[in-house]
Length: 97
Image (cartoon, rainbow, N blue to C red):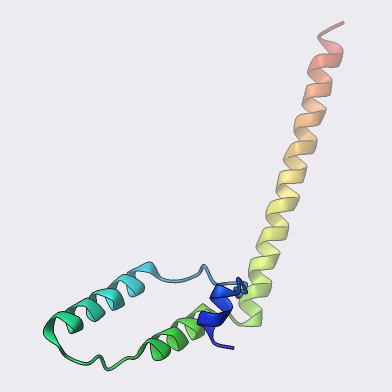
């Protein structure tokens, strides 16, 4: 199934949003310039789509590192939440009496 069909069927790849907007804008300008001048583009739509797909994919080690960072951020947030809950209990319990 082509990416265009997947798009219309709302079947996106998990990392579909990781597209470099500068590259896309540059390619769109190339298309407009080629249409205005009448030249045929060297890169077809399928080639550009395939090159974007290869850029979006990450290797397993990178994904595992990112997952580790996310887990650490969650743990830090949970620790902060626990400390704040203890402080709230301390302030509301002892000073209120």
